[in-house]
Each structure stands twice: as C-alpha cells, then as structure tokens.
Amino acid sequence: MQNTKLALTAAGVGLVMALTACGSNSSGGDTGSGDSGGSNNGGTKVGVILPDTKSSARYESQDRPLLQKALSDAGLDPIIQNAEGDTTKFSSIADSMISQGAKVILMSNLSSESGAAVQKKATEAGVATIDYDRLTLGGSADYYVSFDSTTVGNLQGQGLVDCVGAKPGAQIIQISGSPTDNNATLFKAGALEVLQPKYDSGELRLAGDQAIPEWDNQVGATTFEQLLTANGGRVDGVLAANDGLAGAVITVLQKNGLNGTVPVTGQDATEDGLRAVLRGDQCMTVFKDVAKEAAAAAELAIDLANGDTAAADAKATATSEDPEGNRQVKSVLLDPVTITRDNVKVAVDGGAVTADALCTGDVAQACADAGIS
Image (cartoon, rainbow, N blue to C red; front, top):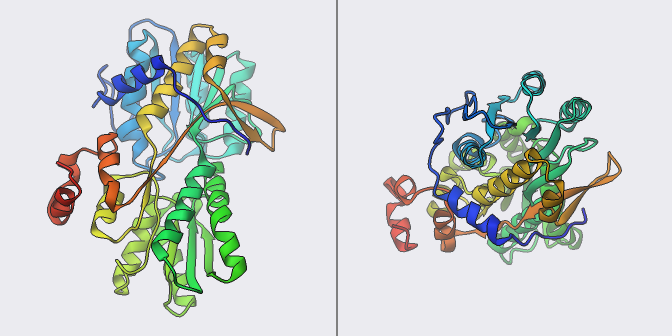
C-alpha cells in the first residue's frame, strides 16, 4: 500500500478534543449494541454501520458515542446501527438507511464482498460512502478513514522482536485476524516486514501460523492450543493480531504455566489488554486513538452531507490501494503508537480507558508504579 500520512488541521484537533471529552451518547441514543435512531433534529441523515461486538469492544464503547455526538453537534441526524457480525443484517441496515434518505453512509465492513455490494447500491441511489476502519476491496467508497494498518503490523513485529530479545532460533507462533478483514491482511504483512528476514536468517523460527475467522477469541484459543501441542509445547513468542486474541492465547499459556515468560503482542489498547501488559502477561499492545479516527470520519461525513466535496478532498491527503478495484482511495490515515508496560499512561491519557476502570485489583500497584492515577 502506498500512502501519505495525514497532518491534522487545527479544526480537526479541536474536534478531537471535543470528542475526547465525550463520555456518552448525548442525544439519548443507546451506547450498547442496539440502534441509535438519530438526534431527531431534522437535519440531514447520516448512516453509520458498525460491524460487530466480537472483533473489538471499541465499536460500541467508543466509536458509537463519539460519532453520535460529533454528527449531532454538527446539526446532522445520525442513524447508528450495529450489524452484529451478520452480513445479511449489514445489507438490510444499509437498505433502510438509503430508504430513509441518508445522504452519507459511514461503514465498517464485515467482508469486502458484502461491503462492496452495499456500496454499489448506495452509489446507485446517490448516497456517498465512507469506509471506516476497514477498507472495502473492490468497493466504491468515496473515502477511507483508518489507522495505517501496515504500520500497526510493523509495530507488532518489532515489539515481538524486542520482547523476545537475543534468543537464536526462538520459536514463534502467529495468530492472525479474520481472513475476510483486509486490515488483518495488512497487519500480518506489516509484521512480516520485520519478522520474515529473521525467519529467513534462522534468528527466529516460525512454529505455527493460523488466521482466525471472524476474530473469534474462542476459536483463537483452541487454534493456539493445537499449534502449541503440535510444536511439543514449546513457544518463545506469539504474534497475536489484537488484544482479544492475545487474551485467548494467554489463557492457554496460563494452563501450561507459561504466561509471563512467553511474550505476546496485541492491539487496540483495550482495558483487558492493558491489564495484561501491566501484569507482564502481554508484552505490548498498539494504541489507536479512536477519538482522532472518529473525528476525522465525522469531519468527512459532515462535509459530504453539506455537499462540500472540496473540503473533504482537502482533508483526505493520503491514498490507499484497492488492488481488487484497481484504484487508489482517497484516505485519512492516522499513526498508531506502541504501548508497553513503561508507557501504559500514554493510552490512559489518550482516552483508551480511564484510570479508575483500569487501576484496580492486582494491577493497582503496577498503575501506581507507572504514574497512572
């Protein structure tokens, strides 16, 4: 993927600050996995389709309230629904939004195939679409907003190398995300930019490699356990694609008395992931500031709802390659940050989780040691 990184405008930073201060859906919508019917302010309708509650808890706990507030505050009427991992429901939600007169649909797809079908219908109905967090390959989205997924993978690969340290022939098991999620493909590709030369040289050894359909943590645990058993119970490091899969891996390591001694990567800086980092069970995670992502997406949606494509184009200073569609998609790509035990405070200060929620029980002292209060 060829892309150019975004430099946020002063206006964008201001919106980020406003979003970060938001803790709930101010228009009265549900912050759970149900539907948010909009602000009822008579403004232009903007649809938001969230993918599920399985691949990451962030979509409901963070993205929904942030997008709801930003769009409502701009005088728009947001309709926010979650497809709950069901491509048929995803399509029917889009149909409903189109029939209700939504001018823009912001969507995080479940698969490129189903996402492209929705975007085709939207385009035919004159509705602009924005890919949010996941690029729809072969689709027709006008814009794409996400973090640089290849860079996320680079950080995971380098984090694993740093955590494993000098251990010639260290055996690595890779647990990747869903094969239907283009982000998962990019995460792995980015990690292999770091790891493959070390596999080729023999510095590291790839002992197992498996993608996990639909990011299912239970399947991830079972798969990892099978790979571990097949390798004679030996593993020196695990490349886990996100915090959920990392947690699944850690449960298996705990059963085998290996947690805390085998480095495990992650991503999303979830509360559970950060706790695991503080305990020493997980060596790193990747913080993606959802407030910045939601702000950037909301700004594009607001521009498009107001018919100002020139303003939207000015914000989308990057491009992302869609090899299936043979096109470059105008993009806003944000920079992720590596989080280790030494800088968990960065994720807390950035709004990934509150100190009160994180710093309880067996990690309270670790939080104090890290300056988190």
